[in-house]
Structures are given as C-alpha cells and as structure tokens.
Length: 152
Image (cartoon, rainbow, N blue to C red; front, side):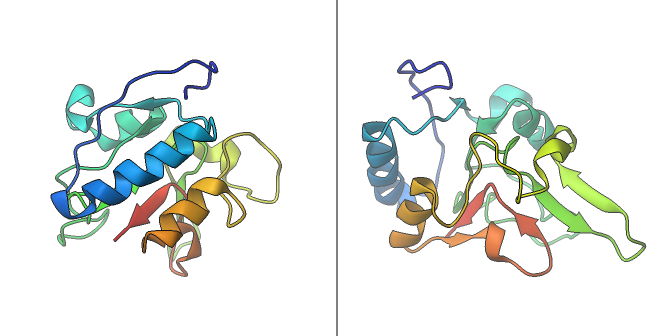
C-alpha cells in the first residue's frame, strides 16, 4: 500500500532462505494497509544505496560492504531489508562527535521521540511481524541505530 493509499506492485530481490518470511510479512502488511512508499530493486538506482534510501525505497539485496568496513553487509547476501529508509534512518556518532545519518536527507527523522508518520518503533506492526519471523531490528543495536533495518 503506497503513501497515496493506493495499491502498488513492488519487487524485492532477496535470499531464497528468507523469501517465505518476506512473502508472509508483506502479505500481513498489505492486509493492514501498512504504508510503504516504494519497493524497487537497488539496480534501479544504479546500485547506489544512498540514492535508493533518499527515494525512500524499501529494498533488500544490495552487494556492498558494511559502511566503513570491508566486511560484506547482510544486504550483500540478501538477508537484510530496509523499510521506508528515509523516515527510519541509520544513525551513528563518530568518535569525534560527528553525527552520520543515512540517508543524509533523513536528518529530520533522527529524533525518535518526535511523532511523525512512517516511523518504525517496537509497537509498530512492521517491527512485530519481522521479529515474529526471527529477524533482528537495527533500531535495537547499541553501536549505531539502524531504524530501517531488519536482518536474519
């Protein structure tokens, strides 16, 4: 269900081992009319994760290392998905105190105490469904907060 309240089709490229989970989760989200702005393969954004996130694109597979590392991300294995990433940014603070927000345009949504649409919290249906299917949520991590991210 798009932000416009209309039905849309999307494409998720994922690892076969989580395909049934994602099918069941998205079926439940759809039944509940849970809004997701767009779901397109990262290839439609020239494999540029930042561009995809700025477009608020929900995606799974993206061959890339973990930011600031040489270790492959679970997205590179198709085992992680980012939901409405603009409104649920990845946030980390560097040792020098600099705040890094991904996507960069997600800065208005860093303060999770504010009320705004499309925010994933532990009370949110999206969170509950992913956790019920055995996914871990990046919003619970200690070293950084990745509010858009679920992985298995």
